[in-house]
Length: 308
Image 1 (tube, rainbow, N blue to C red):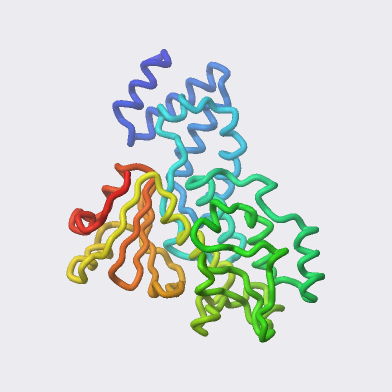
Image 2: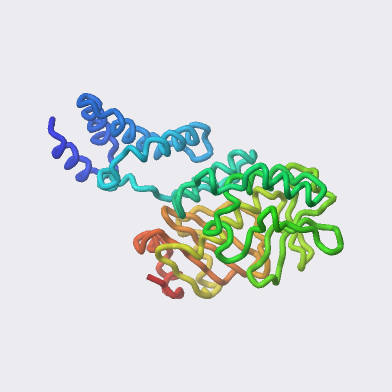
């Protein structure tokens, strides 16, 4: 097998087998096409690598740098379009790893991050000068990474810009996020403001929503994403059917379960699929295709209103 059409045909015949892909990569190298050869090998390795492994982050970084040099129709033919795989089955201990997963998520569900998507250091310092104290490290990192991305953080509720971040009238909390009709706000206790990654509280309810800002950012990320799928479904599911969700093969996210009136809130991930549950009975699903939506148990899916 020496010609490119035959190599591509072998991949199409055995899409789940890496061997024809790696043979094709060697052929590309032999014919002076090192970029496409590396692109194939990176994708093969990343599919075999756990998302929390350090190597996964290295592979994703290299793949991002290489992708602009790769012909999109060719990559799509090989099945190498961006796709979501479960990211939050085990929440990493380090904030750096949490932000890395968030960046991966944004790239697939929205568009890749750009430098202009974060608030610059000058804006953060101006907010700190106005407030009279330094923002927690995790909150600074959140804003610096992607705080300007309305499509990611503020489709439903709102991540407050640093310039609009205020202290509550009673002087107890720094408000960081606001429900879309201002029925609830989330904030950090000023007593905790010197902590790098302090707890986040629901101010109206008076309860802790998350033990850390970075974990709260992960919850907010998924809460917003369930409204932005190419295909979506929602509805109330009877209790004697809901149990199927835990046994559907989806990956349950290791995230705090408190988010306003819908608590407990739980999330499940599949390939190109996110499912959120509220109050133990309401199901909201967002998928990147109608095919991905079919990962839901049929008995659950039949209770949901499916949107094209």
